[in-house]
Length: 187
Figure (cartoon, rainbow, N blue to C red):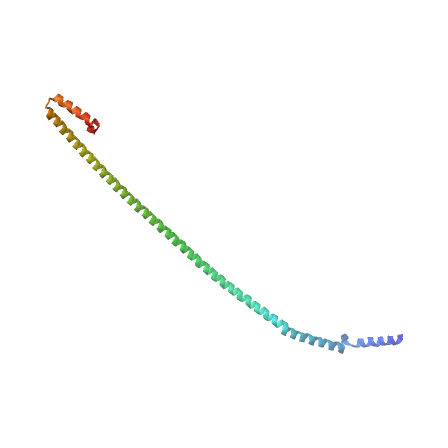
């Protein structure tokens, strides 16, 4: 039995040496089937996996591009809007300053007007008081004159009625002066 196994081994080894690169029909058949299977698998994967993935990536790329374009447009719009608001704010500040300046000018004009009216009123009051004082002074002077006239007529009556000499007349004058008081006569 050993010889039979040895012979079979020898025949098998001889057969193996006669094939180039150990290629036999079965191996070539398996290799071609595997290449066809890989090719079919690639077609199927391309159809159902790679194409949707490419489309997804293309759509995503387009969406990102659109988002970037929109963002840059919105940024430009925001910058323009910011500049417009800054311009409006500066104009509003200028208007506010102008309004405040006008209000200050009006306040100063009102103050000057009020002061002028107050001075006119004060001058009028002073003039009125001076006129009243002058009238009072004139009135007092008229009263003093009236009193002096009445005193003089009383003295004249006493002098005439007594018809006496100068010493008596001097004493009558002194007596009359004492009756009316020295303060009245001296003022």
